[in-house]
Image (cartoon, rainbow, N blue to C red; front, side, top):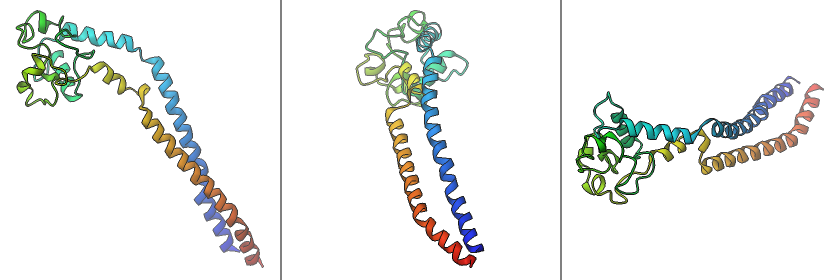
Length: 203
């Protein structure tokens, strides 16, 4: 009798978490979709782009990332770390940097030595950016520099979870749901034996 009761308890504890855990996962999946919708409404990307352009236009004065006390340094480190350049995609020598102090007042752009910062060039680091090829920062040849930072910022947002990520999550949830169904089927098959064992031991 006690053996049957213990088996029943073990069965309950071994399967109860599935009936709680699986629904919670589906709830979390719905929360992800809800978060995407909420974030999409909360983030004003048009305003964000304007703020980024304003910051670059007013404060970018150098393509040297080693001066930690300047906004220019922050931009340059952003370019290197996240492999992006400017705000919009650079499409030639006419770009977002044209009206910055770096191009209009003083700097290698104003001196016509560069059209985009060396920190925008592909594969540069904080230690070798000064050796960036002229084909990139001076001639702005396609394929030598990184794409715009604004699209990257959008991709980093919760509102833009990649489709493949959503698919993988859906696939995982489907597998868990199938396993739960199989578990219930097995439980139904085993239940009569547990009842029979309980009756036999009771006698």
